[in-house]
Amino acid sequence: MNSIEQPASTADILNSVVSDINSERLEDLSNKLDEFHPSEVANLLESLPPVKRKILWGIIPGEQEGEVLTHMRDEARAAIIEEMKQDQLLAAAGNMNASKLANVLGELPNDISDNIFQALEDDHRKRLETVLSYDEKTAGRIMNTDVISVRQNVTLAVVLRWLRRHLMLPVHTDALMVIDEENRYLGKLHLSNVVIGAPDELVQNVMRSDANSIKASCSITEVAALFERRDLISVAVLDENDHLLGRITIDDVVDIIREQADATLLKSAGLNEEQDLFSPILPSAKQRGLWLGLNLITVFFAAWVIGQFQEVLDEIVALAVLMPIVASMGGIAGSQTLTLTIRGLALDQIAKSNIKWLTMKEIAVGGLNGLVWAVTVAIASFIWFDNKGIAIILAVAMLLNLLAASLSGVIIPLILNRMGIDPALSGAVILTTITDVIGFLSFLGLASLYLL
Image (cartoon, rainbow, N blue to C red; front, side, top):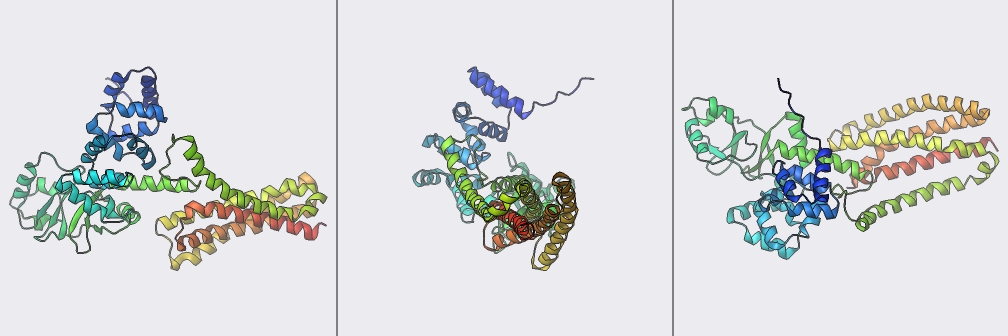
């Protein structure tokens, strides 16, 4: 029996593409691109430095450019759009659905975006206007307006004949939306019911009138949570009067989840979620420099605290050796609590009713870990320096810092969230400052009181 050949890894494909570009085998490379999904081509573009990216973009067929652009991150896509001529942008825009095009238009100069808007076909323009009428990060902004709807008082035979008149169905169509004469949403008719149901059965008898729907003003975070909780494949999007506007499918939600995960990871380091890995040096340095400057301020503050205990440090050198242990352990403990709290906020699992319990639980966890590791480091430091006083002070300081870190890990993201500031963006810096300051202050303060 013949074995099934394993598909090439992304890294192997990337190496092959770079090799073809370096060897100027562009015709061979063009043939390879025909085998890739637009999202894979987009990933290849994002994985190349600017010069090679421009070469690869130049051999992508014009009819595929719009679809490829929709799968790219904002910053990388903007770099390519800057190099495109207006006629290319017009052609690419015609191949994008309304939600994707809405994102792209925001990256273009007003005159070009206006020209693209006016050049669209009437139906496409109306769909785009509907999407643009909703705020970013809402269901209305990401919904697909390409949806097939039917009436409840027709038979399945009529529905089947209607479907057969279409050359193709919208991508990821698992069900048809049932509406009344005024386009109000009534429920969902699954394609499986159309296929296996009796031809003379009315739609209203087999449709799901209890099928989930969401308002267009709903946040994308709530959309993702709904899909996760109820294992949905698609959901209808309605306006405030329950008129059908479009639908959101599972592939859109997967994109949302991935983008939110990327955003949380990158924001914790002060980076934009649309950061282009291969962006030019100066823009990258500018983006990161602001975060480094903010961190430098907090470091100087921690250094100032240490400077207040110069006398005790001069007298007992062992304190300088052990001092980083307290701050480091507090930072790790606090970051664990901070991460869990930010995740809880993102999943809407934290409310007024459970904040107190969560805070007490994290303080208890910090206290338990503080006791265990305080004893451990006290024994280690006593063996190292043979000084009972230093060992006890180190243990007490560590316990205090872990308690403070656990409390801060809960309180900081809650306060930032209440202020409308993303906790993932600045929570880590504030937490690190607090654990450093409390760690140094408690350790060196106790040493000043009891060892001098």
